[in-house]
Image 1 (cartoon, rainbow, N blue to C red):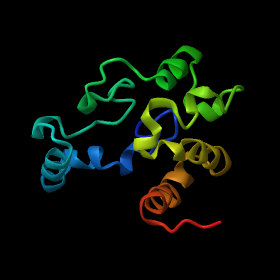
Image 2: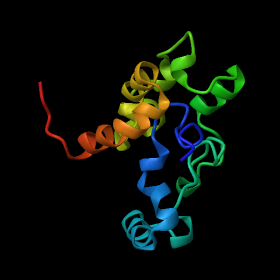
Image 3: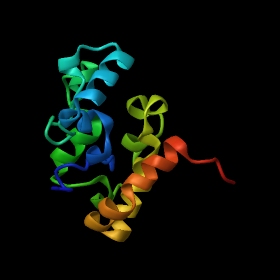
Length: 138
């Protein structure tokens, strides 16, 4: 797995995303198509970098602001930027309330601390699983 290619600049782990996994899982793709009300052929994603910062299954044809910023600055991840964190990662950005985007800053901090490979292999899936299935702890 090319974790650099399959991790979005904002810290989302495309390699664990159901839309990416649906590329090779027809049952999952069928369920996504049905649940999202989109055609079967559109119920997939190749990952942020492979889609050049767009989200075709949502009809998004322009790159998101994070992708545009990273490309302009020539960086791999937002955590490599001296302005990290910035408003591009604010929880209100890019429909974050409906998606696990509020894990972006946490993932980026872990990538910076642990390194990409270690984060991808040992932590990324548990962050996503905890977000969707874990218990709220204070």
